[in-house]
Image (cartoon, rainbow, N blue to C red; front, side):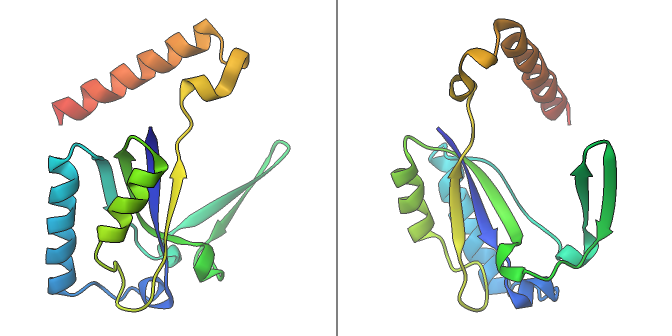
Length: 144
């Protein structure tokens, strides 16, 4: 199963406080463990929400709002995409993770939808389309 592992933002991360050299080294070692175990598919840190935008959908209307966004506890400061056997395995990996922030922090783990989760509505034609899209993305990633 794939899971999205989200590092929740803190007031410091939202103010743009950068991690220390030690934390960067510790996270680098942790990422190496994930890669060697075949768990890590992707992972990145995110700039503060002050550099982001949100798009609200209401019928055919799209409204763009510039950051920063006020609810820090609801924001994401970074993420990983992992391939694990179970969500419990993901929890065990997160417990081994260095604290990603200089203060108390939180990491959220959520399963990624797979084709089987959508049932009959995900027709063979739609499955084929998704497979083509994934193949195109994989080919582009390998070329870069």
